[in-house]
Length: 278
Image 1 (cartoon, rainbow, N blue to C red):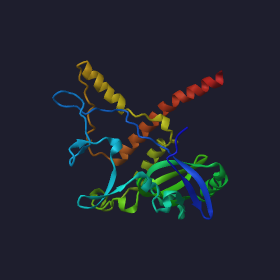
Image 2 (cartoon, one colour):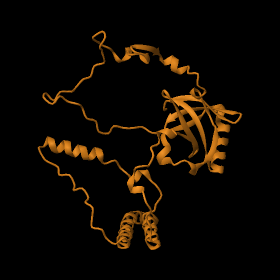
Image 3 (cartoon, rainbow, N blue to C red):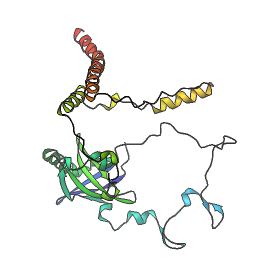
């Protein structure tokens, strides 16, 4: 059973829903490298060193301090952070409900968390989930997590709710200065229709199982090759091609996409026929 990383309530009007949060994603270091000395090829070690006392300090003994003046610190312990005078430390107070399209996920969404109701909160939890789904809105709130207060969005996900922390407005960089976005570009209606046809020819429902991280396999090929004294040649980087007629490029792309799709769907069709025959 996964371990919850936050416990509190979601305030929904006058209703308080007791919930727990769980990390919905994890970062896995599929390839790890050791840092080595260039002369001896031995692992590099790092010490936490106290310059004042000229001695090493164990990680478990390190204290957290906030600097209030030159060489003056206020010591902050874990219990101090657990007792922050901040409502969002133990409560997600929904402030407003906004249309799901109002927030650009690629720009604002940060970490994702599964929201699980406690036994007593199951009914109001499902009420909130179904109401959000029916209205096409998401809940905007604030929550204190990991030494920081976050803006957050709650929205339906499968049978439950998911919470995404959001970047604060001052964390979003402006597009000003990106010269490639300046000026107007006129699009020929026929080119637009052909581009839409290309998109439709590659359209499908998202299935994450179709994708695979090839980075580890590529690194391991290099590792094994070097052990055997071999050299692996990197594939040539794609070079900018000649400027060609945009319509012709789109037509060729559509034809290629159709062939690729047909080749991809043939094994699935053969499997379906075999099942019917049996």
